[in-house]
Length: 354
Image 1 (spheres, rainbow, N blue to C red):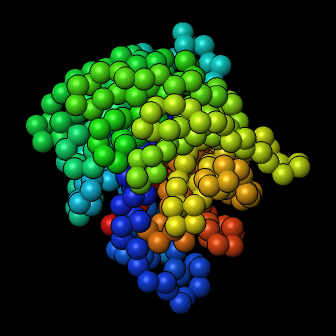
Image 2 (image 1 turned 90 degrees about the vertical axis):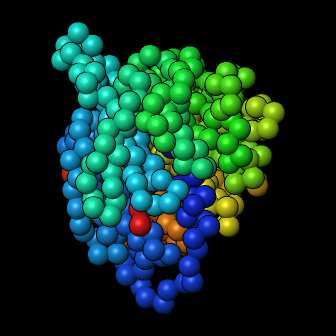
């Protein structure tokens, strides 16, 4: 399946770093700076699970609608947005004629009140929203519409669509540059990243990548971006000011391990590390962004990790493992899986929440 994310959840976490705890890894997991819980979207259950990673338990289940996938927390931490789609789940290679008809009335962006832990509103999104990113001021969502090869800009203050932009085929990952001037959209079918000016909503660049680009993150200064290429088995590095590809970083696995298929990305700027969920590779690859090389890997984190998030103090990774129905908590220092938490059917995305 498809997935995506931008950097703002990580950037916000970096701004909220807390002092180190003295308890053991399982007790410390997710206990920093007030961002103590994790939300996971459950694509087949129509729910978002709120998880206490320190206790290893699901503390709430929120019914949201059909096929919840991409998620983002509002900058003030009061709302959680989730992409909902009425298109049927279509595994790779499936004959479209065998699928049930889509339910376009179920397309939208669900708005969850995190204090009340309930869905309070569903906003327009364009057809088949998969993933999105939120502007730094929290006023605009930029949404990938997979089936129509479009990006929709949604004004959160009015709840109205500001505009729709034609991009490449099968758009997925969305990332807003930290200065809010440009948004990048990864397009799986055309193997490219499309840059859109956020002021004019005009396409300003096309950047070719390896096969099936999935996810995009920016460095906090907006100078570079990194894009996972699932079929290409690599990470594309981009000059995010000139919109030019700088090169590709191969992602490999140890002998005997499954072939890595780069998916979700999480960036730890303190240690200059990029964590890469490897999907059917069942692991997480570790890339040094200065040497532009893979420097390690964490194997057997779960079956098909898709979404990935980094704790507020960079000490723990959380992966949504789609086909094993759980979320893993990984110690970033020891590279050990602290625990795996059963959450439900087909967890897709994972983000930090207060």
